[in-house]
Length: 255
Image (cartoon, rainbow, N blue to C red; front, side, top):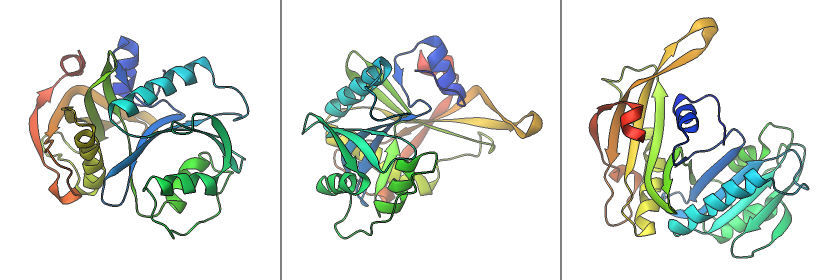
């Protein structure tokens, strides 16, 4: 699965490592309610035409996402969407067949799983945006938590590690995780707790430097690593705890 625009993804792809990450038009998303309690795992894919059959790569990646959802004990939904369309193609594991649905019907599914609070306002979808699914998500799902998986170490059908990736121009020595991200961190921590498995959850931070013609250049020669504390019970966002582990290299971390 090729991705451009993230140096760590490029490294994983070039070295053919056993890590899962989102490609340019594909997202693996865990949805939770406002309290960061995970409810479903959604594999969302932007395609040219939802009436076309899934490609071999789509099937491979979606089956991997389904396996990860099962490993994490989360219901699984596959959503294919396209620009200039008021409908999406949906495969829900509990149903077991493809259905062509409007966005309001998709919202009803998310409400059934407890992601959306009943009575949340519905708004029209701007189908002409580059990513109408994400536009609909922001406008119609109300107070939820949602997080994509930046990097998952996935070996022999098991999730060995979940990695959050952060990058900015702030020097490594002074950067620490932002409290604004704590609801999403709590969601991923609670996903691990709900799975009943001991899965490490870490954060890699690397520096972005100013490059030529306004382009930012990533410096991955030195990575700042944090470990999140995984408790025995689910937590709220204000209970997120993490510890600085060390500075490292990509080769050491991803080998």
